[in-house]
Length: 410
Image (cartoon, rainbow, N blue to C red; front, side, top):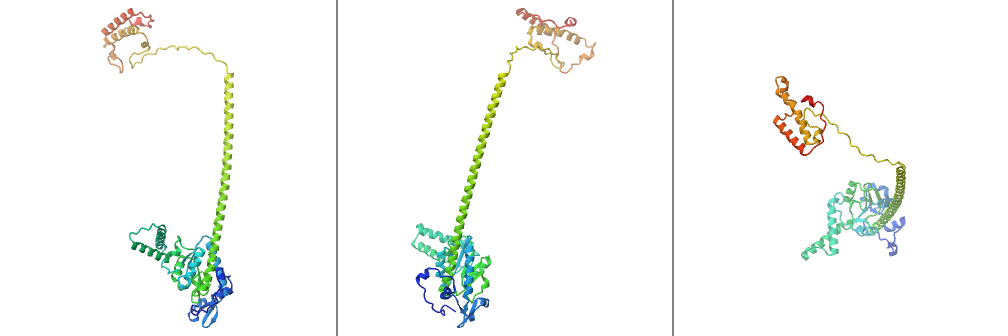
């Protein structure tokens, strides 16, 4: 039955309207939840929720409405209690004010104007418009709006009003909702289709002309009466508030548990650091004691060690080495005075001249061995001897014993 055909029900007192009506048959009957559409406009899939027919209109079974509404409230409370969000949708004239009021009380998101296509399936396109709305409202609130003329300022104000009309209830929505509450499935076909496509569960008020198989939790009831819509929306809003309270309590408990766990970890860390410091101090003391013991032992050993006399330094005798055949005649005579070296060179040069003077007697001697030094000529040797004698006369040097075999060589 339409709204015009709905009989008038006695008004409820203001005190009773402020408090939530109990979920029983009487409160639902007073609100007119049992009135359905004319029988010629019914959906056969709603046969299980219809109590009977009166005045060519179907009557909804309120007992099943109570059971369905309790199940829907429990489901919404569970989803919201786990940190989810419930989006309340009601764009028909009878549901706009009730949806907005109950959503504001519960702190939920809502849409009470026309459902824009792609509101959820194309959310990445809708989100910039929501951000634009938030930016303009913030600019007007802080009086920082940039407008060159009064006309531009008025255009921005009208833009804010238009955006607020369609996106005012979802300004804080940064992600898709986890559950939808819908009034009148026939009116919100786009919302139902998008929710089913995205796999979002739906809780909806279904009248006798709706298909209950399209939603997850169907609440049979009158979706044309303002009182009926308000009563059901109040119970759903209560479920949302309870879920938010449970989520807040769970968050506080989790934070308390994390704080307690962090305190335990800090205490354990402090205890481990104290043990490590104690262990390090003990190791340092042991090392210090070991060093002191080692130093005492070394000092005692040094004291017990007998005194050793200092030995006189002796010079090792210098041994003369034979000159190498491949190198010039250089021996330890270099350390002797120049006169002795000159006399010795003259004595050794005589046999060399005799060997060189007779090449026929010894033809092998004509070949110069590699590396040998050519003997000095006789005149040079004579001058060298005279110079040596003069030096000997000027500075007398101790006579050195002549080597054996010099007489034979002469």
